[in-house]
Image (cartoon, rainbow, N blue to C red; front, side):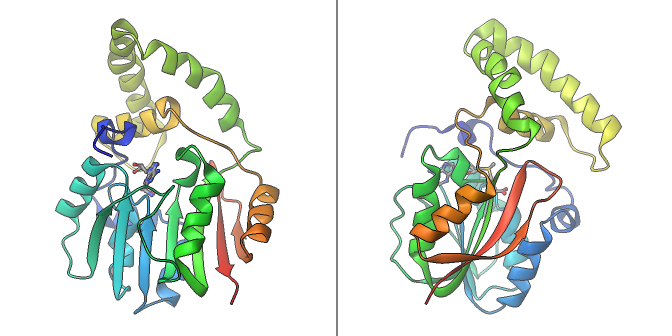
Length: 245
Ligand SMILES: C[S@@+](CC[C@H](N)C(=O)[O-])C[C@H]1O[C@@H](n2cnc3c(N)ncnc32)[C@H](O)[C@@H]1O
């Protein structure tokens, strides 16, 4: 795990200049789940730079942020210094964490980047206690984003392999995307933050897309049930899944 991962080079960090923005942009299903499980043990698998740790740490007895990217964990641990927050470098595909120990597992935009979406999902369920809850956010299968990822994204990923291509991305596409963000989005971000979003959107080397039916079938296999569902207006749809007793 010592090799630099994609998210070591472009960690998914943005919005840290305003903590309230991060909290107000959180998915309502996740916010409620955190509030309803106050005083319990949480794991955020693929926590990245720790966006969800900020709010969770206000409620959890303990929250362990796990990620395969040491740079992301470094960023998170510098920004979130609280006694009930711990960090662990580990892979979602083979977690070195005991089974049945978490009350709540958060998997926010992670399983679809691991290369084996179902395995990542089932690892999250394995570490959950029976009766515990998983918050899952995965890319939607039926939306324009998969098309963009496989077309424009493919083009950008291809040219990014070459020095000139990377130069064009860094000096033309990234600033242009920043400009669009400045004009059309309410949240004001720095260039480096919109660059991270751009890379996560187009350049990320692994992305898979799931229908609600896919997730229902995974739940059948893992003896779990969808309790709540939110389609959202974004690229991910979100689920609250209960591990059966
Ligand atoms: C799009 S970011 C989401 C980060 C965070 N959950 C959030 O919502 O801000 C995806 C994260 O998944 C992590 N990741 C990808 N593959 C992983 C794996 N096999 N094990 C653990 N983390 C992984 C990346 O390092 C990255 O931090």
